[in-house]
Image 1 (spheres, helix red, strand yellow):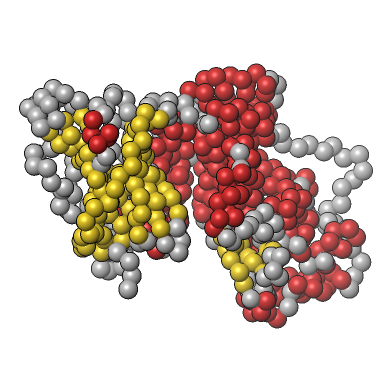
Image 2: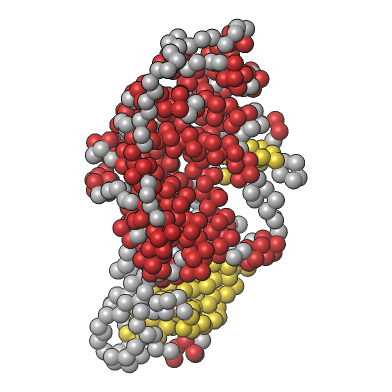
Length: 588
């Protein structure tokens, strides 16, 4: 989870550091007393990073080819986009200065987001099926997963940006290709949405059954399962993007309106989703669940008519499509289109109108349409008229005349076989720099699992690993004494000592070694977890004995472990010593 560094100790005594733990380490790994919530007394939520840092990240964004997806430079850009996405959502949630969105417009990077979206889609469609087997064999599935997840990140960022008309306008002609992409996603949601949403509905609730199911999964099946999950998440996010594009279509070139109305007939993709929404499902026990904030939540039958955000987006997309004057001029309601639209009429009732009063206009239009023959278009096309359509140049450039088999082989050799999940430094940097930002839990809507970590810590095992992830040694630690209560800004914690076995004290640590600490929690929600370090780096030392404190985890993550490293002889190597755990104090 967290990394560590070894720095010269100023305290030669064989004693654990106090609870202040002012280790000269990265902010993401050291345990500090800082206010992890980032909320001032006035209620202002501190941004994840400054506007200047946001501009720097946005300025460095560049277009990547499909062949570069997954590379070191691409991973660095994925990290930057993840951070920008989180900051954009935090600003929107707190009604604060949306400096990320403004910088994207000012630096003309909105169209770049569309290019990256199309490049990632091309990778998913053409290269991932050819690579997934090899990724599972190489144990490099996490990098492949983040390549897939990149698409969902971009959709999520566009959904927050395109809320503003001036950002939609900044898309320019690239909006044509975005409409093409959204049309493909809406068709996919219609054809596979119910199948995707049914996944996990019969998941075992018993801990042992769940553990057995997880153990039975192969790396390949797990990667395929993650692929479906990310696909579904991206398609759900596209529902919001569709609504905003329809709402702001008048700010875009005429070719976008033509693509939306004539080429793809977006209206006909909305009706089946409204009629049979993939974000509502029923469990084998007969309980209803809805997808709310990307999580399946059980709802009472009486609450089924209460709209979620995603359901509301579909209805608002329908409203803007029907009530837009420019679309009305171009959209010809023949008998088929009329019949498809009127399928949604039965769902517009008093409960729905109370939640979205603007749908009264849609209801009135449908009632009028039902009473008349399908009208002729205001500007009927003459037979034999010349028809022209804009070419999707970005997509053509990315996928045309590519040898996908050769490209997959090249990516495997140069990108994915260079490291495994255990020693992938790009992944560790991504986790450290994105998911350990102060306040990120509030943006994601997920608090650290305090209740889980507050259980009794029953066991600790220290594992030494080589560069290739091979195990060099495994040592079982024994708890000693009673836990000591400490007060911190992250809440009350219990600190406990674990004694290293004799075998651990005798083994000299080699160069380029990593440390993994496996922890077993016992209680009603018993589970195992682990903290993994970066590669240990040793510096020049003076006279013996010398002692270092190697830190994994952080108080803000509700779990921290410190392992003592001892140099017993002058100029000799380091050995691992005792360890100290810090877990939340159980609630009374």
